[in-house]
Length: 473
Image (cartoon, rainbow, N blue to C red; front, side, top):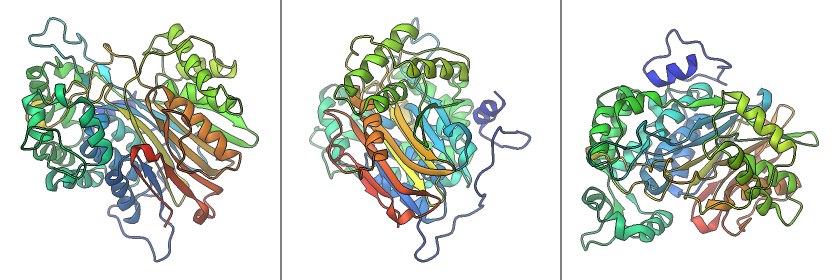
């Protein structure tokens, strides 16, 4: 609770004691690596976000630094799935971590009233959790100031980007209802009124200002300060129905991950309420059988039937219940409804620290509206839509990192994550072939372990998402 309170304030760590807070190193400024030094490996669904993470590693940041910068960059380059109005979950590990690392849960949260009784609240929005969740993860694992992780995203928003294939595909899928909103149309439409296409320039001046305010004033400004007030005013005008009390009350959580042993290797998975990790754990155990995808979905459906889509529980007690569920082989709960889109990324540094994150707006472009002049696309209320499968896994052996996988792809996200991890640990080199029909993975494998021979590490991203994976040098 004390850690979470400090994360909410996001202004100063003075006087705050953090459980297990022992970063690999603390740097006041970043310096480039020595010639020939291995810097780490990065993979994501969006090339420009991958380059941002790579740049942080090249400047001397660790995996948590790079993951934080990548998450913020995705808010600019892939706002259809990961705007500042989004949420998600991250799994982080450093060599020697007990229990396979830690999970950071910042799933989209509905407002207290979900817009009921509020004027013009026709499209209830989710509380924006991305910045707060990344802050908490970075607080525990990062090595540099959080403010140093923001400029990459600011530059992408202010100077502009070329629309990626993934963003163009998402825009094309929903362009008619999306461009009906004047605020969104002003940013994501061309002069002929059609949605931006692959390669078109996308400049987000207002979003750049919001990110710069977070950089200068701290994450807390989005939840307790002037930026938060602007966001709430914009949300209410756009029909989102959020209040300052909603922003202040939604706090990310740090949890123990789920764990499955495979010989001497320990594999950790995201725990509920990110129940895609539970499905991934079931698929990992069943990955040698042809029905792994079916079992993964059935187990998530069974878990949700027993606990609800947004399972409640006190801290690690929820993980313990989910661990018992996985150990029992899961349970059949039928199928899942069509689930919202998501995105994922993975990063490993030369010392073997690894981070895997899965993010979502609970709908492509969330509510399809912006929060006023903040430039933030509003996520959709999770009270109105089924929860996506947030799935990530990290494998370690002794005190060494071995592999990391994060998944997306609607209903197959969990199965793809578990199956890909099982294949890697069975000695297969990750490749760009799809693991399941819909499931997409970002994966990094270091067969000789890290710390160790990082030159053998390989990274892959699913070609259907047109992402980018970059190797250790």
